[in-house]
Length: 219
Image 1 (cartoon, helix red, strand yellow):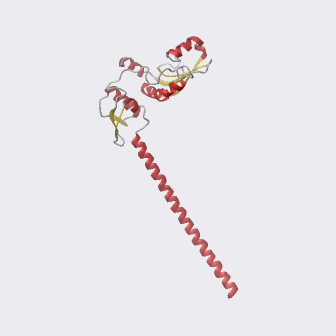
Image 2 (cartoon, rainbow, N blue to C red):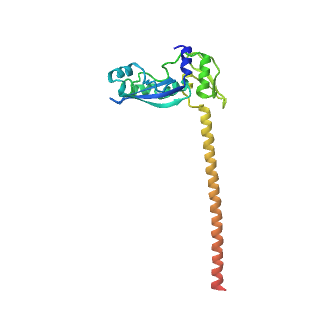
Image 3 (cartoon, rainbow, N blue to C red):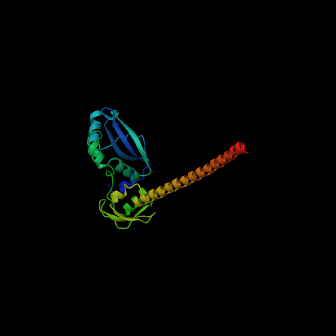
């Protein structure tokens, strides 16, 4: 697929990840679709899935939209997260799903550096930047997190499936842990102060009772 054709798809109004279920055998197919018409009756593609369509008939299939996406890139990203290689190995290839390969690959044009930078911006909203030119999806290049300044080497394919910066997440967890510890210390100090005041109050009460008892018995 050329970038010109891909641009037409990207310019469509609706983008989503879907799951089509065969009502005869309960097998499913997960894919992505971009369209201007939600009633276009698109059910999916793929060798096994189209064979199943011909065998059981279109009326025996039902499509469900799993995720609505802002653009085609986001749909590809979500499909890549859901339909992982281990997912296909365990459940795909006709076992429980008709998917033959991992998601996020079908319908993508070959990337160059400018398009990879655009995809980074679309996926991570400017959190990551590439410090080296894009070569191949599996070849490591240097990236940087714009929030914490962390520089790391990772393949573009891995970066596009990241949920967030690993160092930022680690620092956030550390800050959260420190905050939780401070709250525990503050709560303990408050408890100790309350116990101290209660002890003083009880001591004064016992002293007054002792004085009254002494006065009553001896004076």
